[in-house]
Image (cartoon, rainbow, N blue to C red; front, side):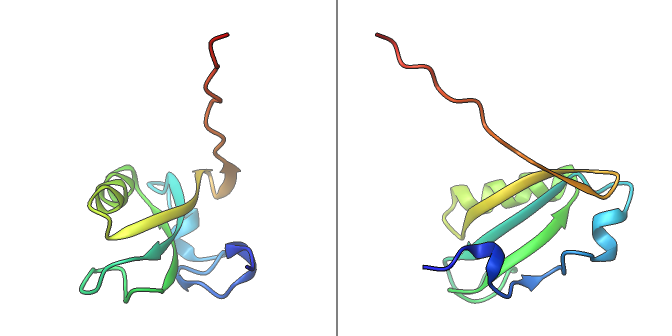
Length: 92
C-alpha cells in the first residue's frame, strides 16, 4: 500500500493559500468513510488546512466515523510541524 503523502489528495494543495493564513493552525489528511459528507465520497483522500474550529469539526467527524484521520500536524506561520503524540508509558 502506498503512503498517503505519495498519493494525489483532494482538498487543499500542499502550497495552498489557506496554509499561510493567520488563522490556520492544523493540516489534516484523511480518508472519507461515509457517503453524503461535506468532505467528499467514500474512498476519497483529502488534505485540508484548518482553523482550531475546523479541526474540532474534523475530530467530531472522525468520532462519528464519517472520516478517518491518517495524518495531522500543527501549522505555525505556514510551516508544517509534525504532531507526535506522547507515548503511553507501560507500567511494569
